[in-house]
Length: 103
Image 1 (cartoon, helix red, strand yellow):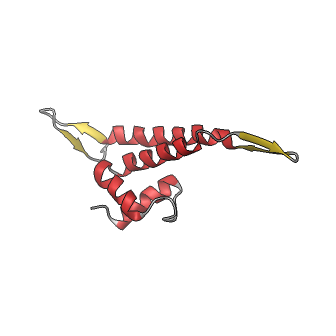
Image 2: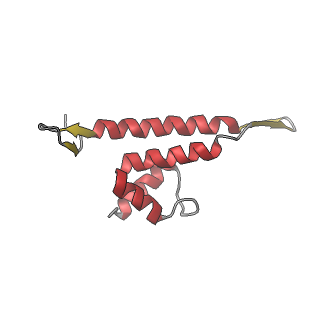
Image 3: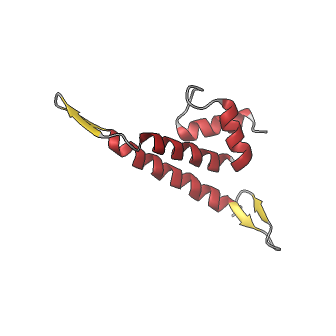
């Protein structure tokens, strides 16, 4: 079961400080099933999907680049996927374990 600290970390990773879009239960379930970095990746992927149809707008001399939000969200999703991949280590015998990299 995800701890309050883990849920807070995903909220900070994804700029979701409130439960307006993602409840603690939803985030906790994502963490339990995937780990912190994969949960963060999944939230960013969902954000990218929700912003995919946004367009850039220019009006009254002001420009708003809403169309680039989806691409930026995908970039962040890739970053968290990369972190999760680096944390996955294949132990002898082909058993996958998760742990922090020690140098």
